[in-house]
Amino acid sequence: MIELLGDSARGDEFALVRLSVDGDRIVGADAPGLERSLVGLSLLEAAAVGGETLAVDALANAIGPAFTAASSPTRVAVAMSGGVDSAVALLRYEPDAIGVTLRLWLDPAGPSAERACCSPEAVLAARETCHALGVPHVTLDLREEFRRAVVEPFVRAYAQGETPNPCMRCNGSFRFAELLAFARRAGAARLATGHYARIVDHGGRQLLARATDPHKDQSYMLGRLDPALLDRIVFPLGDQTKAETRAEAARAGLAVAGRVESQEACFLAGDDYRDFLGRQGLSPEKGAVVDEHGREVGRHSGYWRFTPGQRRGLGVAAREPLYALRSDARTNTVVVGPRSSLACTQVDAKGRLYVPVHRVAAKLRYRSPAILAHVEERPHGFALELDQPAFGVAAGQAAVLYDGEAVVGAGLIRT
Image (cartoon, rainbow, N blue to C red; front, side, top):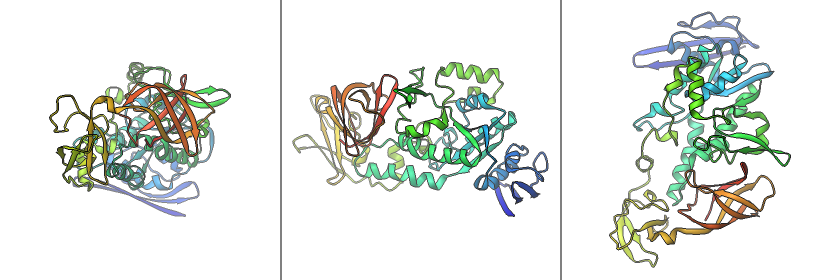
């Protein structure tokens, strides 16, 4: 027998839940505020019980760390963000679905934490969607794990003069690793998410691919996801548009049908990354802004405030537009130059090719168009020879490679 304890508080209100669990059944429960008794229920069944908001939250906190369920070949774990996309993904698999939401670390000083996909408000919205459909919902509190795995490397990378993409680290490793681990202990055969991406057969192998809607395609952000995991993952929204998703949610009467989009880099909680980095200990130490010949042309208040291709905020008067070319953490300098100096035709990345390939379309930033390139596999990564120059290539950003619609390789840019 094990004892589970969970609590929740908001303002002066507080709720506490105590459970005694023997095998796969709850044999004792002190859980005021729930809509029914938990005694005799499995943890899977208890996860679908509603009631007063704080009481249900306390129950979720009690069962989350210990949750397991017997295996079912038809059960699907659905990653619930609290938004419309994951809600519609859930519709595809209910009633034999289980929702799961990751509660991740957010900067408490951020101005709009409630919009983040991992905020307490998002957790409540996700749970309400599941319970409205009679579907169990589990919350996994991974705030500290997320901070160590994603936030701290983000801060370190900027301190080293790089321009990291935390969403790639989150989606490509941390988030899906945690979700798939949960799916296993929840007895689910597959994991579904509301991402706009597809899985296709490419030469006899399953690979990630672009979504049908180019305006919502998220294959770049998912590019580092190991293809070996794809046989357990489904993306039910990959063949439709966002407008179709909202319409489907509205027809189903889901409360989240009109919910606003969640923001990128959710842990910033709506804040500018420069302000966030300052609060995380990066010093606004003044230093030199220099041209390509090393001549000082201005001063800056923190080299980590500048990324390759940045034009605004340089504080340098010149006869032609100047851009940040790179930051040097060792010397605390920012190097600037004309746009022509940003041109780059050779890119080295740490990562892997998923299939043998020589010609690809390389996407080097989320909002940049792909560029045709020759690719050569290297130890621990690959090298690209671009057909035309790319501007603003930055160490720490991701290079995602496509053959047609399929993602055939991905890595983090080193040069």
